[in-house]
Length: 300
Image (cartoon, rainbow, N blue to C red; front, top):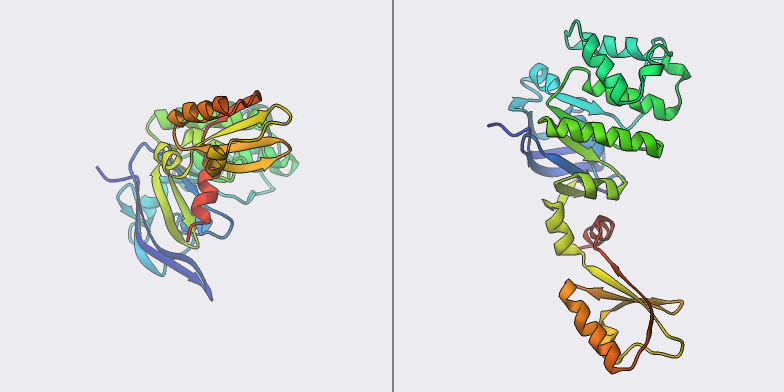
């Protein structure tokens, strides 16, 4: 079975800027995949190359086995992209925009699927509204709808919830999860790392046009992050000297200790008991993707 996306040795330069510096990536069918990186890392360029909007300087890309250059018609039909920018035609209503998008792919009698998309994205009441009259969040919903209108097996979401309210965000992710359960491959770029952590089974991190980390979300959390222990000791109590190597932050009377494993908690508590320290407050923090991201981006 062909992977949903195959990227081999892709490079792209814009003048003096090396946007992509040899990207190799394979995403199996049915995966919910995260593509993360700081601004300027090359995420949008990679998506643009995949969608055929930009020609790579070198390398090959394929969507569901179809080369994006030599077999571009078939590759386009397999892919739906939600762009980062709000791009829309101001002369049509929401429904007309979706019907026209269907026509681009030669699809007729698509009303039932359009109705389902409108309902799931909470756009039914806006179906007859001109695009110019929509709020920014509503326009972004329409972009998602346009990417789905031809039922592509691979869906790329480039910052889909930027500037979107919490209610829509939850509704959107419920819909996208359902699409993924139905077999669609989802590729997500987002600066909301908690979204990537909860949604994506595997994550690649881009830095200066290169993939610098690629693994399952669980493995990344284990490799680059750990638990934290926040302590507030009783007034006058000092942190035992044996625990100072674990100290990662100390401010306002609160001590933050690093724990590599949950099993490290008991020796810490034992040291506090032996030193006669009374604990006023304690909290265990779980590893999160934000900490992983910061550590990966600051590695040499």
